[in-house]
Length: 163
Image 1 (cartoon, one colour):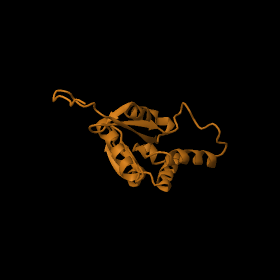
Image 2 (cartoon, helix red, strand yellow):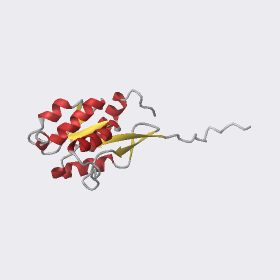
Image 3 (spheres, helix red, strand yellow):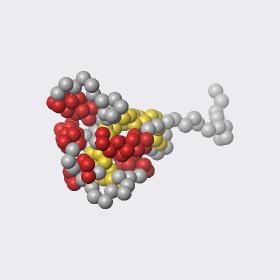
Image 4 (spheres, helix red, strand yellow):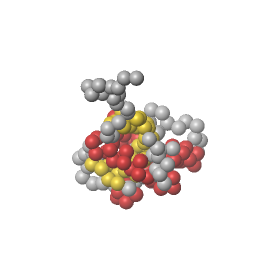
């Protein structure tokens, strides 16, 4: 068996892990949702040898939950998606303050023990105190801030998380 010369390099090993993200949103304000989806799309490098793939676990307007016939069934279906997520991301737009559904998603995150990342959309003059008070962390409206913070929250909150 021959040894390697000092010029040969070891093959780099990259571990890919998946983070399920529930992005809360108001269907009347889908521009925030679409931008967050773009940011979480694709692979993300989180240090040497670690690739993170974020999976969208939310309910987009293009694929609503059709089988829910009552408000309770819809809430339970959304809470099930939240429970299957590692982190819940909620924009702090003022529309969140008066949204019963965003409040329900906050409740679902708290019941499931999922961390909430509040994200302040660029250009907002006012923010939702409901979201800010419920959040475990806060991030400005920048991809290089939001995505790593969601990763950190997911890993730190989920004690059973494994790479």
